[in-house]
Image 1 (cartoon, rainbow, N blue to C red):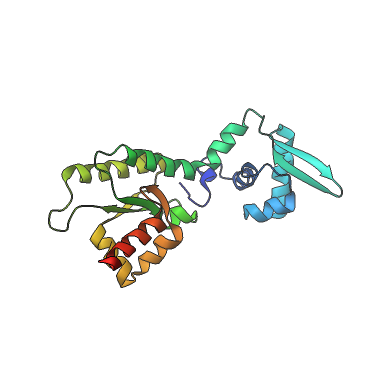
Image 2: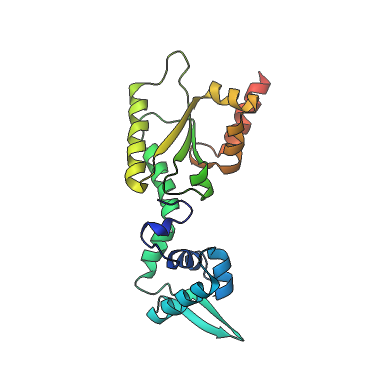
Length: 214
């Protein structure tokens, strides 16, 4: 799945980005504004798509002064399909969240980061997932833990066609990364979409505060 344009999984034309813009808002927008937000094709091409979609009834067009404004007709039979397509990335995150919730061994924290979280990855991009667990460096993860990570990777690939890249750390390793100022910590701070446990910033604050209090 193209994380920057999930609708391209099914719709390869400019129609996809145009419909994605319309699905994100109930406010009428001009063709020029839709073109700017869609960031795909030409303005003329965007207007042609809007006119064609208006003829099908999926998009409503209304003259407002010298301009024409468009919005998605949410009563149209195809509207729900459009909305489903434009929410694929969120549905992926929800699927990861639900899968982790079912695990017999829960992580301390898990969050998606990187291009999947930012929404700028392509069809070959990995889904990066930070997972912090309680196992010590000496004992290592249990087989059940390893199996559930593997199963999640399989599910993510079946859901999206993208590989899961799990970045696993125990709590001590997580703190070492933060204290050492590892570059990847900036990615976590900027991108993190939490799928298990406390929100990333709260998780980070709590662990750093506890370490400083020792």
